[in-house]
Image (cartoon, rainbow, N blue to C red):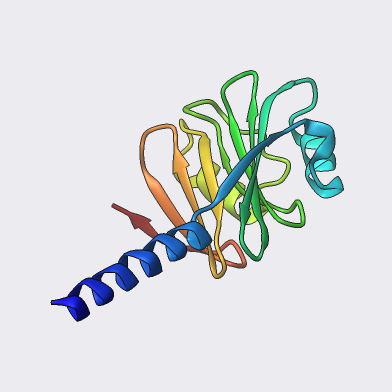
Length: 149
């Protein structure tokens, strides 16, 4: 019976310690504390739209990413270097300057009465959401792959 209690105690301690190591630590920061690339991106593509809040998401091995919320409700996510990962217009049209031309052209040609409200840059692809709710997937070069349902 003593061994069961010791083993149970060891497991509880182990899981408590692991939970502490794995959990992310979000920290509110000012827009001026964002990486230079993120600040430049916001200035160029979201000019005149103030940042309402910025969150630095920390993992035990360093900064994982940044989440920036704009006054108009849009959300932009950046990696640890300040490169954009996702832009979510929250059903509003995103500025197109940072979206690859092939993706812009494909959506304009094939879905003329819609606009891009969300784009996510993944390792090997882009995923976009249009104003009509369709989700499109493109390869890393911006070539259309499929409609995602």
